[in-house]
Image (cartoon, rainbow, N blue to C red; front, side, top):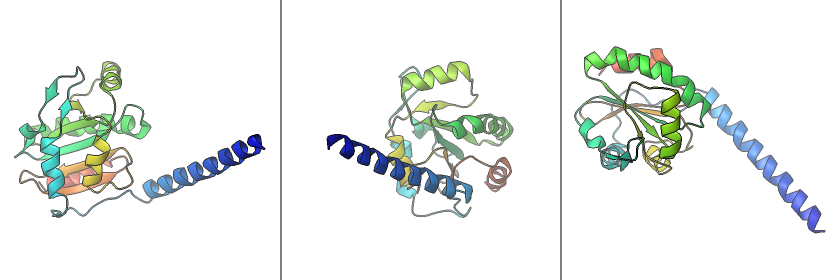
Length: 183
């Protein structure tokens, strides 16, 4: 009797997990959650939360995102265990090099542990600042409209602190360039 209950529970859990994976995959393949490039008033509180968010570098030393205030910035929420996050990093690094001369900052926020981020950065060097925000970073991403809680999630903020675009899923370099060219 107990075995049947365990097997039935496991079966229901597998079906629910499969439905969740399918729904997430469908949402990402439908283009993610691209937000119009006009300034978005709703996430202004999210921008304030971003500037105040407690982050550390990969060595665990506290850092301040408020130093980015007043600059256009691309914020990429990622994790070392997220395949699409890792795949898009070379594109983000290339765009960082291309747009640095225009004063556009890039920052990676690891929704991960400092140990995992440090190990990852030792294997895959990234030429823009990468900080650890921990698993609380998912709450901050939700404040920007990422209700699915998926990664990667990218936010573009202009120098005035207005959210210009958000993207759930891997960035498309040409789409991101278009947004950055309007800043």
